[in-house]
Length: 265
Image 1: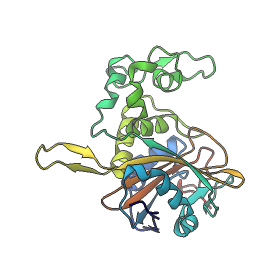
Image 2 (image 1 turned 180 degrees about the vertical axis):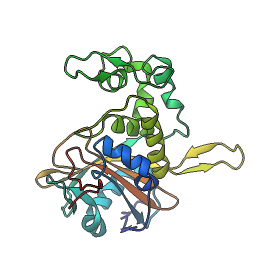
Image 3 (image 1 turned 45 degrees about the vertical axis):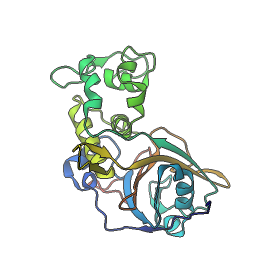
Image 4 (image 1 turned 30 degrees about the horizontal axis):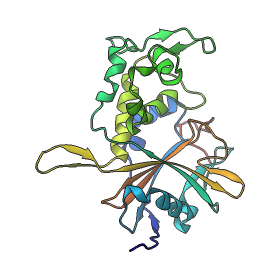
């Protein structure tokens, strides 16, 4: 029997996320020009969720009064404000999320992108004088190493997180070694993704559904920003068992920091 199901949401203000509490990760996010511009918020919802409901779920999310009043976005001056928009349309992309280890990065080590020491190989670039093989692999489709990571693995949520932090924000200071990127991506991933163990096979599998979302009001794109940029993104990370949704948000640009690295508003 067909029926209309509306999801209702409530904010969970006390939900903490490790990567935002970890001083080492915070130092790296500042170095990569992402601290103060990246956030995670938690909400719960009241109905059973399955992935085929993704479009209705996202639309209900952005039209929910609690979300409208509590979902934070950065304005052009770098100040956090509630969304406060009447959303009329949402673009939803279902993001593959199956990885339970970091072996997705093995080809990066076996292809010469990274030296045995862990240092990232440098390379010549016509536009960027200080460039490396890792960013070349991530950005340049005609590079020799672009296809060392399969198209399927490039779509995985873990690899997307890795790419986002490698590219960083507007004033990003890039790493010489790869380990901070992988460890930080793993920490963020573990914060946002839920897994379960099969009691018979003992195999661990991901139970979360990941949606990349963009929302529009009557005037056009309004979330995650009014300006489109690959490094401005929002993901809904849905745990169907806890009925929680975690919103990972980042807005590309120059942050406004106090002396201790905290965003000033």
